[in-house]
Image 1 (cartoon, one colour):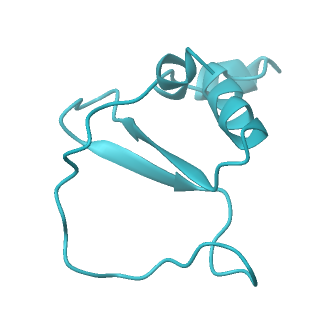
Image 2 (cartoon, one colour):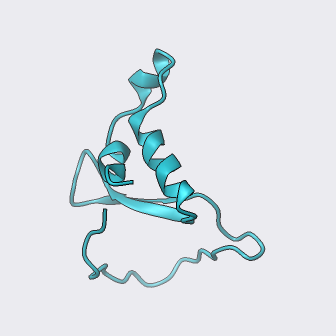
Length: 79
């Protein structure tokens, strides 16, 4: 999972057009294998923005997602 942040920021459309598995899907697969419910990664177009990807939510026994007040992330970056 060391390269998940790099794989996630890689464009995928051209890979899919030629039948190849996109690098960004490798990131998703690697993170899912850890049992995580989702991941956060920076936008390749604007590194000051980020994406939240949820693999599952609001399922019985799973994580719950709700809209709330925005709280800045201050915990650093983890790879």
